[in-house]
Image (tube, rainbow, N blue to C red):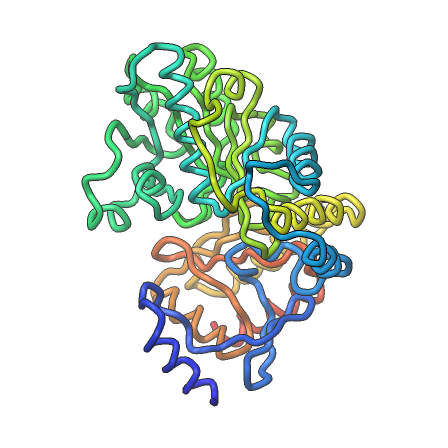
Amino acid sequence: MNMLEQMEEAEVNILHTYNRFPVVFQRGEGCYLYDTEGKKYLDFAAGIAVNALGYHYPGYDEALKEQIDKLIHISNLYYNQPIIEAGAKLVLTSRMSKAFFTNSGTEAIEGALKAAKKYAYARDGHADHEIIAMNHSFHGRSIGALSVTGNAHYREAFEPLMGGVKFADFNDLESVKAQITDKTCAIITETVQGEGGIYPAEKEFLEGLRKICDEKDIILIFDEIQCGMGRTGYYFAWQAYGVQPDIMTCAKALGSGVPVGAFVLNEKAAASSLEPGDHGTTYGGNPFACAAVSKVFSIFEKDMILAHVQELTPYLEEKLDALKEKYDCISERRGMGFMQGLVITGRPVGEIVKKALDAGLLVISAGSDVLRLVPPLVITKAHVDEMVGILEEVL
């Protein structure tokens, strides 16, 4: 079958919940993808910020193949060596206390919400607690994660959702304070809003949240699913601010392609929340997924991936700022590290995404007007120059 026939067959058999772009990818190499007809694409989308190491990074595939030959799954009724190694590395790099591995980011959010609710239940002896989330946030598609997603477009068809959720404005501490009651058990926010339009948190905002939560014994949850695992030049974006949450969620680049997520708790949250029987997962933390996590951490350390992101970020930002100055349709650049957004005015951002794809560049959108660039963390200056050249042609 040619590529068009392949796409037509997919539409026959796959539930149409995505308006997919008209391309069928077959393989990847480095920071490039190739479709079934051999066309080459520079990847600045990275599977929506997942493929931190690009494709076939030295040592990564070999670690997964080695684990396949040993053991893929046994369930959480038993210990396995990769989860022990991956858990130790995740706790060490996050400087937190306990980790729970999941299959996805949305499952990590579900676990974090349950842990916060259980913490408050253990403290107060009742279960009618409230959670404060942020407008324009995105935390996932399951009912719990959707309940704390601050975008009516995602929520309205599935209401009523989980009760007891209030929304405040991101980077507006007073709006958060206005929502706090004696029933508030948790505040959840992305450290850098992704789907909402690539908005980094302000340092004073995160510091203010931490102070409120400390004073009122409220659990502070940071969603690091997209902005975590090196994307900002730190393992987790909150480390750039020096403000640690009580619970952190991560996924996406955690396995750099293998589906895996986690929520991580500090000592306070871990000691007084979820107990045996409160939470579980059949596949979460299986040997195959955790072998990927462990190898990703090893590669990050050995090849100094974080230092590379920090070193290259000024060059990437300089080139994007030059695009902003050159083209009137770009009104703003915002972001941190390799999580950047260009605000597009006067034309649909989707049009630019589609034309870039035609020209051999993968970029995606965020919100209604932001061109999102979340490339593999191993790009070079040459990749940045190539990306800018293609965008100039498109614009």
